[in-house]
Image (cartoon, rainbow, N blue to C red; front, side, top):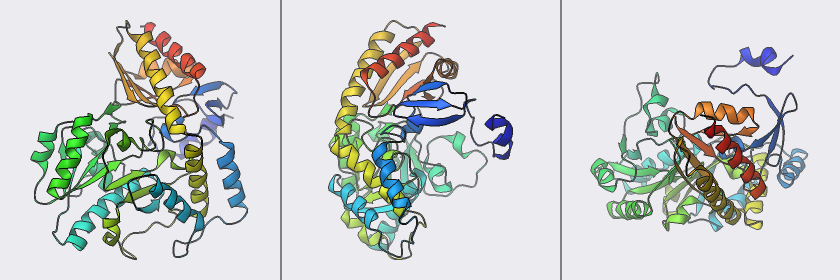
Length: 393
């Protein structure tokens, strides 16, 4: 009996699932329950940056499984402390709070920004400026922070204190700021709405504006972090230093984890009992995260992502230059969007049938997010399949 027939009706219908049941993975390849092989250019939505079942991470987790699965954060957790130190040593931040997902990391960032202004500075600020077409999560606060009405449908009333500026428009950001603005929350590449990178000048001037106005700058690196864009963190491309950085997805190679990182000035924003996460940074997640980040750094995978991303962009633009079904090809590192002249879904369906797993970004963009170990040969195969599917008409 197929998985869907036996178990599918027991799930809430929260996902528009593809009719593929994946049961095994290795590197950039996946296999379904019928044994069909796929080339994976989704990476679990930018999660499996090291590919599927990376041996060193699996070994570290297996070792930890035999020792200790979970203890409360009321006790010290050695690998959690080591992972925090590794992240702060290689970022512009000084402190880390661990949780389980990107939504939780962004929720922690919102709470940190508000509490910093209200309890540390005492100015009562609470408003968060985000951007139209942004995506920050699905908790009540983070879907409110998200600049897309479709994710809010049916969840009203929403929390107060959020404003939405036009992306890459500094004048509009300044217009949306008030004397109650605590922070600006930004994705340096808007992944879910079409793979849209921020302009460098905009990001630099935004950081300057926040500094001048006493507003915290939060950079959501849930999708762009951990080498995906060709740097360990996307903010490095822009030469800016956020006050808060949020992480999840690729931080532990596929094991659930999230992190909110902040500058030392934010230390007193939280105190014992002001925020917590039962499973955040627990021994298993910390072991997976530590092995993942050590691998990213030790094997210089962000630099590899930069090279492979440039190759992929070049090959896509060359093969698709004369294709009337394509409007644009853009991206940063191995986060790439192919903007179609029409809906992306039919093309994606063809690609799945032909053995290439990709995902849309918005309605008309095909998103490439392969493993950071992806090879030129795998990129060539993916580009050929995309060109063929688009030329079918």
